[in-house]
Image (tube, rainbow, N blue to C red; front, side, top):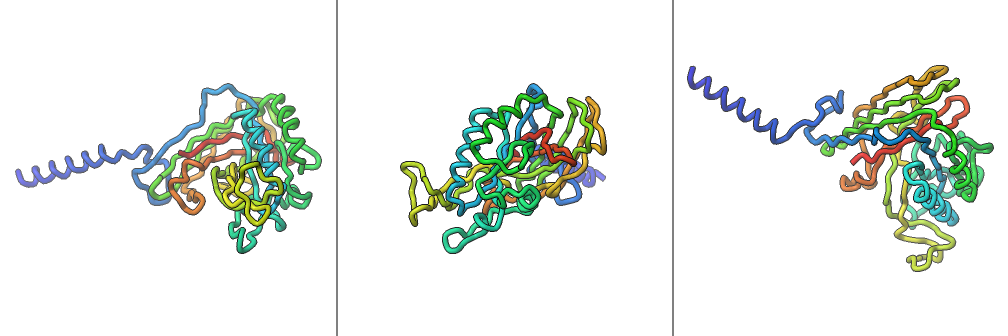
Length: 300
């Protein structure tokens, strides 16, 4: 009996030591799939003042020689307005975004970007084109209109607040995302939420008809080490997301959504690139497609 007790004691001690050595930060963070004790949790800043955050969509392509000027404009707007603006660079269309061998082997298009482009008609209008909160007619707008549209949109009171939380299993590359939507004003139409991934600092070749002074240029108009920022990389819950409220929403209404076991895929499957990836949550009116609120959270 003493031997049995001694063995049990050793087993309990080992299990206890293992638990201290590899703490599982949130055992319920990822469900219905294999988990491991490598969770990293991040939360949005829930203490920040409620304010309108504006989405700038830049539809682009790596063989579009005028598109770098639109990317520069989007970056200028981001720097000017800070965390009041979220930028998404969306490679879409059949003219400037498909791979073109041998110099442009990459395909940065996504199914969600293709669906959005097909609906809103950005590439059909000629790239580069973009949108600010999808609140213009027509939807595609030239880059020289974006700043003014952002300034106008920021004057509107926010319709809702979005709070994001992620748990990332850095071993299995699986992630859970929680989104809490709190309506600040009433809204008469059905609302939906789409959650996508973006990635910064992807280096690849880009055509540029007016490259910045000092840039390395090959073949007359190609920058081999172009820095792509804010790139749309995929959707967590489909191209058009899911319903948040069916019909009118009242002030104070709260809706929580969770998305489990999403496989995170950084460019070239490099784990070190996780630091460049973000979750972007977009709340929009199902009928008009107008964006009511957006927020962005780096996952690591």
